[in-house]
Length: 315
Length: 315
Image (cartoon, rainbow over all chains, first blue to last red; front, side):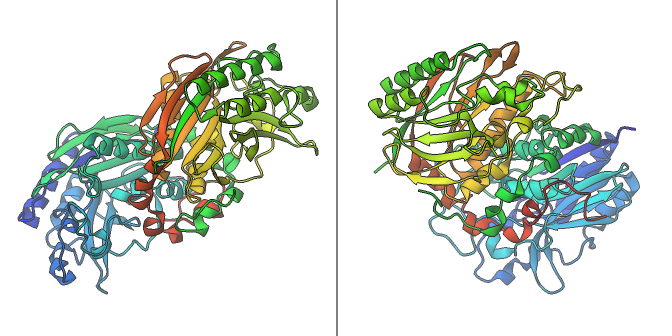
């Protein structure tokens, strides 16, 4: 029996600093309903979906940023998204800023099943940017200031929470540039990886880098990750102009062949869908990317032995 | 001072089973001379450049295949390629089938400097295909029968053998589909990765897989490997119709941004060139892919702990 799912991306247009959490939640609920009416089994929202991309703003005192974080999930503001998911019978992926009871801060995402229950949590491992104010940059990217690196690894969940048995994984934004992200999940037989991203259209350290090149890098890393691990990938942008800072869109659904199945056309709130069959991940996993037959871990040691690059070993 | 190199690809058209080693060597010498006249500092030849892609032919008795292997390098047949390189002052990368004095067989490549000296050797780690005759396939791909997996890892050489100081790496064909290949060299600060490939235009296990998809996978993996490790990549095909078996072309030179700098247009012997500045690898290595700041090896353990995929750890 085919394991078909109708997979939706709910791309977010810009969320301004002044926008209320409630208004932003309204927009997500509208898209959840829209996707469900089009038959979606699962809706992928973006990274930090409830707020503006606040790591672009510097605060000497980190405590000034506390109001961007969720201290519980669900909470009185987001409960209605969970309730609506249960009512409509649709699961979702959601990114948000998490503050733990111990006061730790993470860039977090969750998978919620069709009954509105959280079945998995992920915390962003690859935080881009920097921790201190950097006067050399054309704008700030302070994820390393406001978040700790994720401490949950890259779990994969075997779940039928979206209606059919599936191996589900998550990552967030900059994680997609790292092949290690995809491979660790590939080694756990992942079939669908969901992620959100907020990616500036300019490189704060290279004014001449074109937006087209930056969009290409987005597609390249998502398509390579999908192909090299024979998995579907669903990536949802927050995009458009947030308080003068532009982020590109191009949210997409990628097949295990690396081919694009659907791409957004706007830089606004937009829902796109694709019907996928999770069994389409099988061929890659038993042929070119049959890891058991082809990987040679005896030659991969440096990948886990050393963090940074070193000079060449041979002369 | 910029570290500029004129980098050439010498793509090989088909080499038939009946073609003599001497005639094939003639063709490589013609291309070496052509590239040198256009100012090349280094010429990248293909995988198994001296012979047809013999792993498509099954032999019950492996000894029947002995004549495809080189027992020394250089040897009386190939010496004139080394001599010509020295005369012209151009380095090269060359792939060939290697038989060691102990009788081991490898799919091997070498880097030769401008004085005709071998400065590095690599043996293909990721052997595709299968070891025994497979009646289910539309054609055979017996690399796992005729070669042992490479035992030299993925070394990177710091060398000025091409005229400027450069960190040089190699891989071969199917290695390019594996992000581990690029990452292990990236962790050794590689700046230029050279490779050759013989890639069938059909998937022997999936008749409906299009040649366009297969070409896309070639570009995708080369471009992702270059971008994610901020390195140049130069990939040379053997292509066209070898005894009824078609292989695609699209040899290319890729920038550290992942962008294509040059792509071949034919399926014949063809030389393409690009002038590159090795210092263009620096920006990626100190920004998005500054491994020391961004990699999180504590979460990569599975990559070196387990070879094959296992079921998900979480439910």
